[in-house]
Image (cartoon, rainbow, N blue to C red; front, side):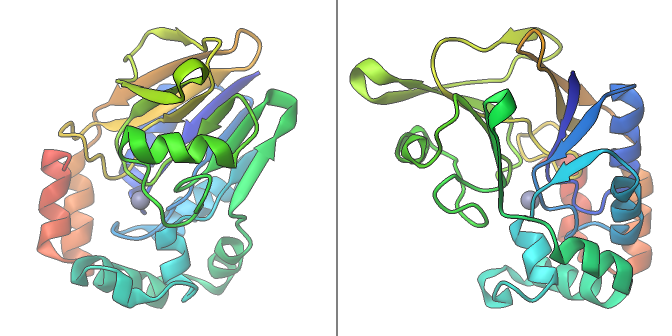
Length: 244
Ligand code: ZN
């Protein structure tokens, strides 16, 4: 089975559509949360996802829009975007968003899906090997896919000395899962933050247990023009050009 893994779409429809076209035909889609927030087309993104064979998690920006998280924890730009999203979201899409779960263990494929971290699924950033190391105790499957940091990375757990090593996710190569347990972040579709503005995603083949990580150029200027029209903060518009 071919599974498309998306994370942190952030209401960037142009990026989402570009990724879906690049990925081609897949059997299922897994989305690791933050469908909305920051970007200009939350309704359109949700409507695309609603028509798919999809497993989707809640992220912190989804919860902020739903008023399930304190907006004071957000910086002013993120808060502005969350409040704007809350205003424009249709009731049907609000109801879809509110039903998203925090965690999905998929025992059949020996995978756990999480937005933030296994310990704190909504808000913790797994951004260092030390944080990753603690979190290997909070899920049971060999592999856990995470999002939230918008940075593609692999954390590999070494049982013999209780340490974690970090690797970049190879681009366009078939990456085979090793004997070690791993946490893998496929990067962000709608707001990459690793200095590369291209959309990031992964395709997971459950038959061969291999992963392909892809980066794809999308029409950033088109998304930025929509953000201008929506009156979203300038800093959020500019950062898309830099992937930061
Ligand atoms: Zn995010």
